[in-house]
Length: 445
Image (cartoon, rainbow, N blue to C red; front, side, top):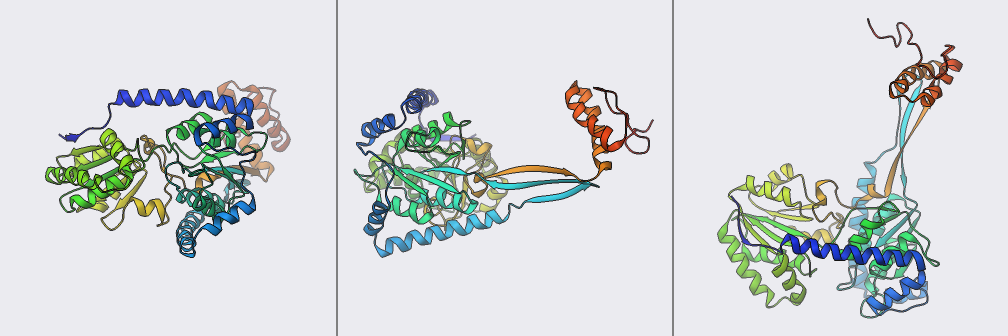
């Protein structure tokens, strides 16, 4: 049985916090819907001390942001965007349109059609998370979305130059210096100055994630991507320094980012606890990391790898870093997670920033039913059908007529019957099932 050396916050505390967030978001979205730009402006002033007549950045402002970056900064962003674009293009190539003759005279197909308007949220209140621009804007671009709107909060009282540069370089059509519920609400609901989008994507804090949840149905969303979660699965083949570093590397998102060590080695667990305390003395972002670790950090010692697998699948963490003597075994057997990071040579930061896989991933156990953001999220698969011959229309029509009558749908049945009469030459009584034809659709007696 697993042994818990450190537990996170009580579930009741978490639920109470979630309820508070839900109420605030509901009221805020209602205000944005009722008052539009006026509400958005008030909220921006209240939460970000940021006041403008128009929150959309002009081309000259975008150029000024680009000019703030060094040539090395630009090269580094270009590297990351190349990796994200390449992988998104590889994924897009797997999604093909289909058209096939499934029976003589019957053509069925599907088309992958891009969403027409996407809203990409880029978080940036505590840290200017330019990587989220690559992950959302670039991926939408590869999918072929015609209009891409992106919002990010101001950073230190002005647009975050690195975020704006990444948004622009990724191909955004409209860039707004706007954060939080007000950004998500404005993109989804529309205001006097912002045309609404059809889909919202991107990670964010608890308020942004809840706003996306409440807006789902009005618009599409990628997934519920709330505060960052990380799990390190490790055995005695790895050391405490690297485990502690990988846990705190995500806990620094803070203050509500769960970080979990799951191990078969109690010795490693205890050494990692000590190493975390050492690193928290020197980590520059320890103010955020300390709160996350103290409140949500967990250390779990399992009996064996089978128990670790069971626990990991139950938790369904957003990021799962695996450093064991059987990493590929976990790849084969894990079913609930956001993304896997296999082996000591990689880590969550690689995926977050540079390697090419998408970092917008499911949180709060949503990995049980969805994967992360990818090019396919921006595509709608729409089916179509064609019937090319009279014989095919009459054959399908007779089956359809009788199946409709089984359900009591006489109007549906008549849609089939009128075609059986016209294309099959069969006199079907009105609102009755079509008689089967011997040797074709008549059941064996």
